[in-house]
Amino acid sequence: MNYNIAVIRGDGIGPEIVPQAMKALKAVGSKFSHNFSFTDALMGGCAVDNAGVPLPQETIDVCLNSDSVLFGAIGGPKWDAYPKEIRPEAGLLALRSTMGLYANIRPASLIKPLHSACPLRADIAAKGFDMVIVRELTGGIYFGERGRRGTKNGVEAFDTESYNEMEIKRIAKTAFETAMARRKKLTSVDKANVLESSRLWREVVHGMSKEYPEVELCDMYVDNAAMQLVKDPSQFDVLLASNIFGDILSDEAAMITGSIGMLASASLGDTKRGLYEPIHGSAPDIAGQDKANPIAAILSAAMMLKYSFGLHQECHAIENAVDTVLRSGARTPDIMDTGTSHMVGTKQMGELICRKI
Image (cartoon, rainbow, N blue to C red; front, top):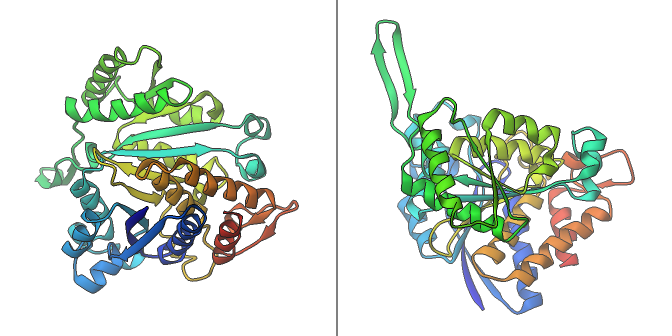
């Protein structure tokens, strides 16, 4: 099979980690007789520097004409003072909206080789955890009306959180179907004791639950969910959350896996075309130093194989290779411990995983 993939390397460590994911896909292609072709496109700070905007029309065209998109990271201090409409992050929000990617799937699990890297208490880490966070991606406060206005007390800034029934129903459907394929337990996160948008969220999710009687549904306030993630993460199977709540909770979940450099994500809509990216940022402080962990980018490529291309065996080949390499003791600096592990750089980690594939 032939697959055309748009590649957005982005800023910071993006140009270092994305090539390792591309090499993993090529290794899979060699093993399973697939052909992956790659087309580079600009987005983020590098696009601002080269084209004056964070998301050029050429990039949109490349992405919409691809089978899926592999993305690294964007942003950095260089562009922090730019107007909001040309900040690097504006490009990513616009691309998600343009591609109709309303569901962000973020798995988070603690694998045995990384128990010592988990910041949680040893007895909590020993229980392990395996969860998926389903985050609504194109609604809520990140896309609501915003601005500044004058008041008698000076300038007032505002950001609006809003959701309609359609937006909640489609992300709830994704979450319920994800739970059905796993342990059939869904935790819906909201702030219904305070926010009207959360009250509608809860009503719609409970209405959807009648279509999935096998799934055990429970509600949890977002502050309690944040606490429970560090108290007993093993209790969670699938978490459903709004854009901002899902953003925050998934980063917390990433950290308790041992490193934010370990977590992949898939952004999906109503077509098979998706956007696949590590959830970490551009880490400009280590850019160009061969220190970045490429595993999240490589696992994002594995998610692409599974969700967009239906290549489950090929996906498992990457996941198994990552597990084998970590069990051998290879570690990038972010997951290094004082035991029997040995430090490797970005490129070497990618090479080790490709050999195992």
